[in-house]
Image (cartoon, rainbow, N blue to C red; front, side, top):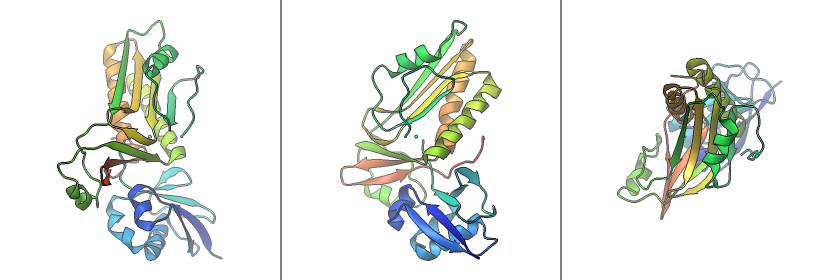
Length: 253
């Protein structure tokens, strides 16, 4: 009996392999690491990226030694940088965690404040992350591509995400914020797709009785989202692009 496993690829790996999915056949008792090895047999160009890869099995972060079953899905997580559900205009249970593939409206911060804020809140902290012209740190393996565009301005950002796992990670971050800072009224909304220069790609709103808790919650939300959520960012230049990021963390710092 053999195990048939579906391997999903993202960002720079997807481009190198020329495919979003690869089917591998493994012997019984195989692990996530064996799936990686089988993938590299088909696409040797991926081998140098091994040190910076993280894994997810069936939508949950997994270790390399986790055993596989027939029909499993294994996502290879390249370096991330941060994230497409549809926006919900109606009030709902907090926190508000979304991926959106359309531009944020000018009134988004006002909308979120109205949905989140309570009479007991003495502080509302909001954060907008916007596309800047100066480039960031290239992902491992993208150094040569970055050098080709040295001195040039970024024209836009392209984002893609492993949506179910990204939303799961945002939920974990929100739970940590509630436990650490006592902040429950929180929004984390991330863009996918193309984001032009100067437009926002992520918005965070934190409401609390005291400003210290609200500031701490907002800062934790953006730092952990960028470090852990499987959301990938490519900087677009006039004649090419560079993937940005670092190996994903699979838990809080």
